[in-house]
Image (cartoon, rainbow, N blue to C red; front, side, top):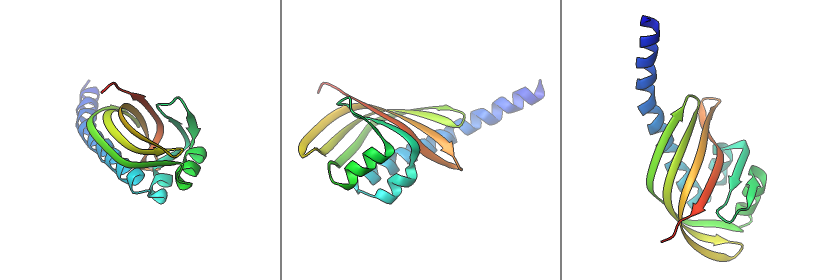
Length: 138
């Protein structure tokens, strides 16, 4: 009984730290996509990344990275308005509301979005395994 109680105390203490780590990862992601920091994005994205755009297009890590390297997908602004983090052991869900501005296939966009990120802890670092956005009415 004492062991179980101690485990719960340790787990509850780890949750705020994990939430802070994910919030930091979200900020790093936003800075990397805005700054076109391809090395940071390569390291941050899981190899089996599922990147689902609000348009319904779904890309693999390679497809997505190729598009941003070629300038077909560009983010000039990524601004989080809210972030809710729900930890699940070595996985965490970040549910966000944000504003994204940029260009996709040479067409400008200015989107107010709801975004879901799935972060997984691999090799001691948080990796983005899934991205999904939905457009919100302004």
